[in-house]
Image 1 (cartoon, helix red, strand yellow):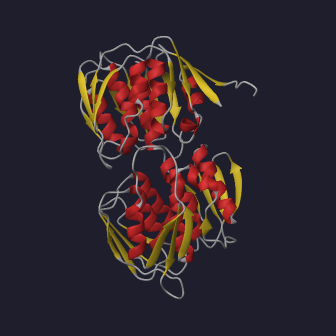
Image 2 (cartoon, rainbow, N blue to C red):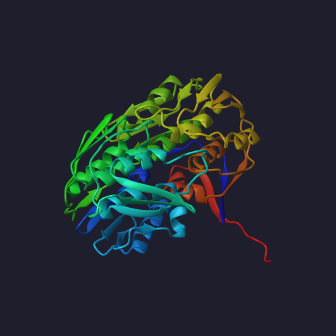
Image 3 (cartoon, rainbow, N blue to C red):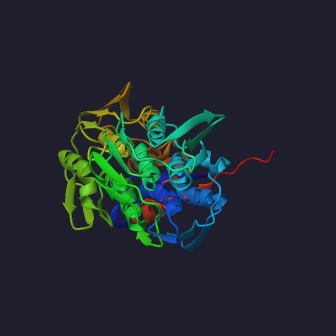
Length: 428
């Protein structure tokens, strides 16, 4: 067990390079199961969730070779088992992509229910509805989901599928399952997030026929096989980039965030400009710098291209430092305000009422001991610690390590006073 010791009051300055997208990586790794030949995936973030997804592949029988900390070569030709019920599957949310990938390859699957951060009710009913439409029978029992094609040859059949809610997970899972189905699949009311497009691009590079990714409607023409044998580089992480942008603003710093796609950050940059934060953009970089005092604004999370739910905790920290009262409305994920209790302990004035947080800004934060309740909230608490007066201890770092590549190292390179130390446990 480890914790961060953060000394606040230091303005971040310098350049930071964004790693590959966590949300794309955890879907692209199982997608390799659909390939006939080995594939090489580049620009993987060196994070816990990626390592766990690779571990699942290896347990299924794939040959995985790390060429460097951010590149892996996967040969999944030896995978014979359509069952992924190992304990590691229940340790992260993204493991549910093995459902679609195994269905696409074998026409059947048995996968343990996913885990990950506790963010309220996050059902997979839209995934299962889509799998049924593709011609499978579904059973759930003892924490596992089983699906099998109703055809003798275990093939799937293309279908028209309308998602009742915009779901990134269901959109990607149905793309994975439908790639090798017979006929055409049309998915409507799709998620349009950048990592949805990245997964579609990866699948197309392996031989799939997917059109419309990034729009409301995705059309997939099934193919009998996907040759694969490709080398593919994952897009930059939109959320990591946004986290460093907000960290720069919160500490009154001047930071250039590099290796990003500026259009992916538009919902955030527009809010920062409303708050009187300095923003400059280049082809693959954004500079964030402090101006005069920050102003309040209102934020509502929405599916892409709206404001991302994964940036809501970090943004709430920034609003707690800005002058005036702001409203933060969470319309995507349940129970995402758990972290506000930790911020209140640091001196923030935040009132949560259902899916809205009322943030009375302009308060001085003070260092104390806080615990990360989930991945993005963990990053938000580190930002609060860097902006606070005095020293803050941040515990439960496993949450942060799930999704941020060398987070503390990158912050130290920008001047942050942050140390990772082991928590000594008494001998029993």
